[in-house]
Amino acid sequence: MKKTCIIYGSTTGTCEGLASKIAEKLGIASQDVINVNDFKAEMLSLYDNLILGTSTWGAGDLQDDWYGGGLKILQSNDLTGKTVAIFGCGDSASYGDTFCGGMAELYDAVVSKGASVIGKVDADDYMFESSAAVINDEFVGLALDEDNEGDKTEARIDKWVEQIKNNL
Image 1 (cartoon, rainbow, N blue to C red):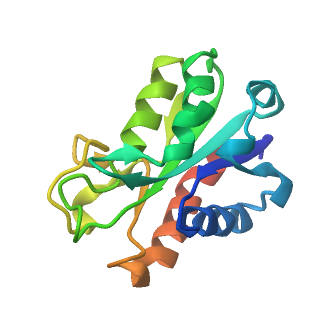
Image 2: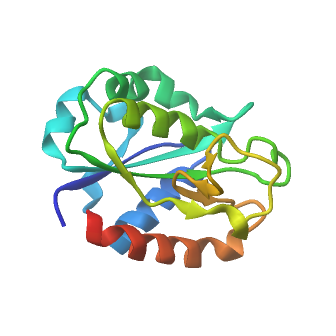
């Protein structure tokens, strides 16, 4: 596996915990699991692969810390040659019309800067109304719902890790 980091934004700790689980399953060292508040533009040159994680807030928005700089870093740098995977968490029962929508902003940002995105997930296994993060019946990354489908999290992560690991 090429040099890979996980960058996440987490308000309640859920996305941080998911980032740690994914890192463990992929064998990514803890120093390469980075809170978006600590992410700097110069770090991009250190990694071939980026795994980006966010919770979804409001009307399908990214977790707030991403707006403090991480999103701007992604939007203002050439990401050609980088491989990106995205994961997000949300609440499909209370926010079924914007479920995991924050992933869409990350996806749009990295695709517009030339990154290759891997790890799309079939949306059929989820209970939600709609999501900006769904394109052609697939989430742009791994969608997780710890509030309502926490019993599916481990299996979803395992399946996704198997899907992306050979491309990292």
